[in-house]
Amino acid sequence: MENKLSATEISELICTRISHDLIGNIGAVSNAVELLEEGDMDFMDDIRSILKVSSTVLTSRLKFFRMVFGVDNTNLEKLDLVEKTTKDYLKTLGNSNYPITLQMHLNSWQLSRMSMLATMILADTFIKGGSLEIREETGRLLILAKSENSSAEKISIISDAVNGKLIERTAQYAPVFYLMELLNKFKLKLSTINTEGFGLCIE
Figure 1 (cartoon, rainbow, N blue to C red):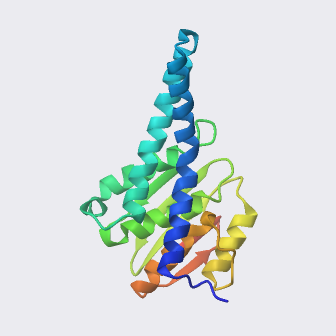
Figure 2: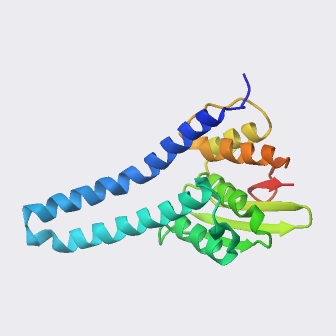
Figure 3: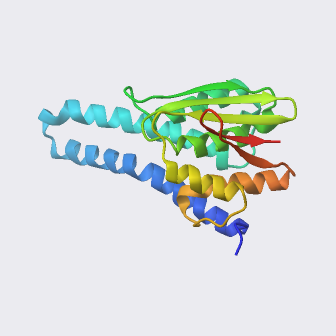
């Protein structure tokens, strides 16, 4: 058995991953609405905070998912919007104590979706914040991740997938399968970088 998935299988994993990443904040909004319906004004400050945080997270993640997994649209050609959307998404993963920062140096909009997917994959390896850098060089795209606290298990699984080894087909790694499918379509190669952190190279 290989890591080659059908379009249907990849779609199923993506749908499951998106649902998983949204359900928590949808539940929080639902709880806030229930508190409003009860009419207890003592919770009003809490309700406002829940609605503000959850709506921001949902909006940021949906915009990101729309660009990464949706049908091609002109927004992918706007590199400033790609950078903002990616940074807003990363804010929903980190927090003020353990932020995830991003430096994006991208010149070719054709690499926008791949850059965002790689960012999503690498951000998943962070346990307590970290830094990401997207750097386009002649003939290749580098996406580099650095963190003092990363998941060695996730890094190992991602490395195995990139190197052609069989990994479990779970929604957690939907972005990995999708990126590999995209690169195969455009006849591009994906490899890992293990110096000064962990990263991905597309060329």
